[in-house]
Image (cartoon, rainbow, N blue to C red; front, side, top):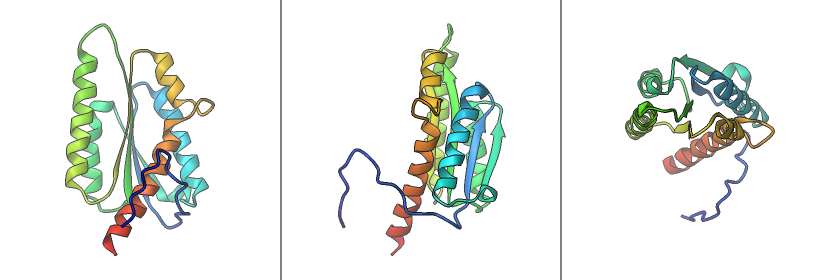
Length: 160
C-alpha cells in the first residue's frame, strides 16, 4: 500500500453512475446556496449527472447530523456532503451550534459505511464566510465534491 503524503488531492477519476446526497442548511442561505452550486458543478464536471445528486434542505447546521443519519440509512448514496454556515455573533449560541454540528456529524461519519464530508463553515464574520463560499474566491463546495469522489475511490480500493 502506498501512502499519499501530498497536501493537494489529485483530481478524482470520472464518476458517472455515482449518487451523491447533499444536505444543506437554509440558515445563512446565501453562503450555503453558493457552496451548493459549486459542489454541484464540480460533481457534474466529473461525470455525476444532475439527476444523481439529491439535495436535502434542513433549517440550520444543528439539524445536519440527524438528517445525515436518516439519509444514510436510506442506502441510496455513495457519499453524503453536509453544507452549513455558522457565523459568530454576540452570544455563545455559535459555540453550541458549531460544536454540536461538528461532533454530531463526526459521530454519524463513524457509524455509517459511506463517506460523510464536513462542509460547515464556522467564521467570525459574514465576509469570512463569503470568502470561503464564493466561486470567484475558492468555493469550498467544489473542494468538498472533489473530496467526496476521492473518498468514494478510497473506500472502494479498500474493498479489493
